[in-house]
Amino acid sequence: MSKRDRWARPFERMVVMGESTVEGGPWLERPEERWADVLAGLIERCQRRPLTYFNRGIGANAISPRSPGYANSRKPSALERYREDVIAWQPDLFILCYGLNDMRAGMNVEEFREDMQTILSDVIAACHPLTVLTTVYHMTGYRSYPPYDRSSPAQTRVYNEVIRQLAEANDCLLADVWEAEGQADWLIHPDGVHANAVGNLVIAHRVFEVLAQHCSGLTTAVHAATWDTEWTQRTTTERAAVGDPFVRTW
View 1 (cartoon, rainbow, N blue to C red):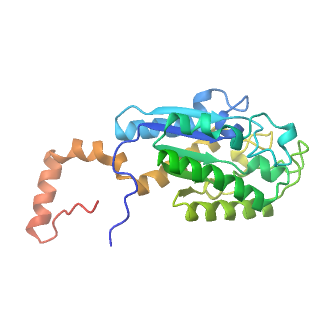
View 2: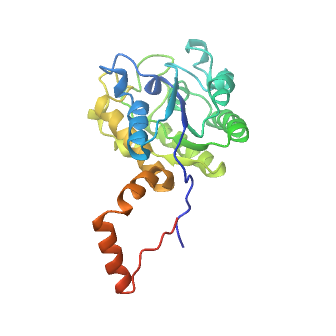
C-alpha cells in the first residue's frame, strides 16, 4: 500500500505560531538562526518557489488566560490572538508550537488540551491548512524564572503525550522536536530554556523531515528537473527491460 500523500503542491503561506523559541531573541546572534526561518529556507530551496512566511511567536506567551503564567506573560495569549495571527492570513501550512511555558507554569494538562483543541478546530475549519504540532522542547532550567519553575522532565513527557494525542485526533502531523534534540544539554543556551543555534537547526530539520515524509509537493520541482536527464532516461529504461519499471505511487 502506498504512503498517504498529505500535500501534493508547493506551499504558499506558512504561519508558525508559538512562544519565544519561535519569536527568537538575544540567545541567538541573528534572527535567521530561528528554527522557523531555517525551515522556511529549506522549503523554498526544495520546492523552488517563494514561500510567504509569517512568524507569529511571542516570547513568554501563554496558551490562554487560564494558564497560571498568564499574569506574567506577554499578551495576547494564543487563544486571544489566533484569529488575527493565523486565520486572517489563510495559511496552507500552519505550525502550532505551545506547551513549554504553560507546562513550566504548572497549567493543568487537560485545560491545555482543551485550549489547543479550540485553536486547532477553528483554524482547520477556516483555512484547511496542513497542520503540524511540535512537542515541547528540551530544556534544563526547570528551577529558574518563577512562576515558570513548576515543571520537570516527567511533566514534559506528559505534555508531549497530550500533544501527540491532539495531532492524532485532528489529523495533524507531529514533529517530535523533543525526541530530535535527544535531551542533549549542549543544544540549549546557558539560559536553560532556549535552543542555541545548533539546537534550532535540529528542530528545523525535524519539522522539515516530517513535512518531506508526508508532502510530495516538496519534491515536484526536483522530479521535473531530473526527469529528462540522461541518467534518468537510461536507468528507467534499464529497469523496464528487467520487469522492474518505475511506477509513480503518489
